[in-house]
Length: 175
Image (tube, rainbow, N blue to C red; front, side, top):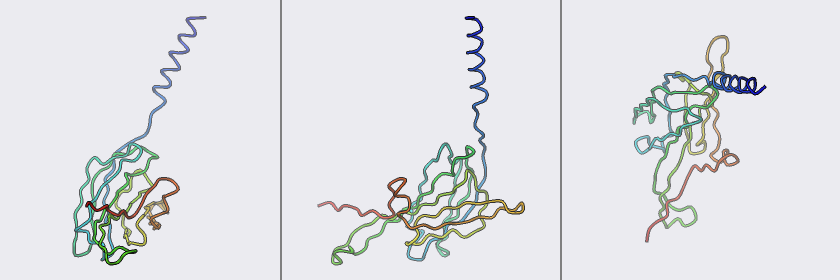
């Protein structure tokens, strides 16, 4: 009886080890992100957040100041079912305070690019941020053996139910 329990435990452990595997891989990507003219790409800082084990093995960006866009290319490691790493753009500016126009304030604006899948390939659809829509979600589906991309624009506060994400922060001035 004791011997069969040991074999049963050993068999269960072996099955758990060999059967609990996750599918993963690597994929190349390439896409461009445009910004409204009042958001100059020369002043944008680009950041990213690993998402569920998905990360960039290599990521390159190239700024096109004339077209006001940033071109991304690289390779991401993905786990099937987890989303592409979140890409965050920050833009710092000085402007008049809305409530006290005689005062200047420094703001840090955030723009979020969420890719709803684990890998994306080459996106052939325009991705464009505006001050009104600072959160964009890219998704795709296959239609007749062709990839069709969709871009959904949301206002900055749509993520507040899930996590506290802001599209603008005001810097506290030192005395």
